[in-house]
Image (cartoon, rainbow, N blue to C red; front, side, top):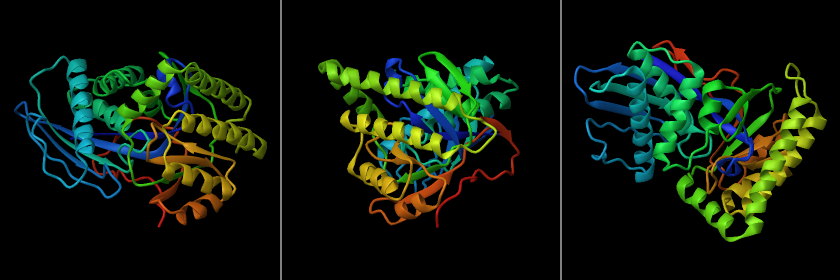
Length: 349
């Protein structure tokens, strides 16, 4: 059995605008998806997927993914889980020059599916790495990131960017602008994540922004302004010492940019009442800044706060189902021992 894991991510700045060639800065966080792969003697694929929602669910199927299991979770979550795994397998087979190979696959994750923390990217990245290694092929990080992007691009009908998959593959903080992807040296920012227990419809949210951008010049300007925020934030990070804890002045400036970014995303219609409530609860508790992360519509917010106050405030915020501190994951995709536990994230009690 071959086992790989890859981290989730939060967006410091730039979601949605990155789809239109503007830069984005996602940061990998220590919540990981772990994929275990065992080649089969036939060409069937059997998948057991665990913990892909807040409460967890199990998916098992063999052969065609058209036969969906009867489980008590929203159908889009099941379809997404299976679709991303199948896309990862397709990329792995292509990389290995194989076609008629089946796998037993187990997915374990402490990243909520569809919540804006890059669960699909982590599963795809870890899946490609584990499956290719199971077939005796070692891919370098750049090829894993590229193939993972192609997998997400196919599943998301051409609406994916390279940001999530590149970040999950490389770890740390990265900058993505179109096809230009590179890592950034940043200090360990004090992220706090709040989760409303829901999941946004990424495709519908991206399509909604596209419609606004095509109909209104000021909406297009809003997307461009998000890109300006990213560039400003990147300049601030470039001046920071990556070996030291960030000083308060840096956190204040980054927080202000996060707040601007959230306001623009809200104007583009991708926030929600629960996300806004958590953002304001975090700011009221003393966070330097807070914003939604990911596609929006539900899911997670990310705040900057080195103190415990934001976590405490979010625990008592109606609609916040989970809150945790998210350390920067300096390591991206990696091979794991078979017995390793995938649950490395810290969860609030």
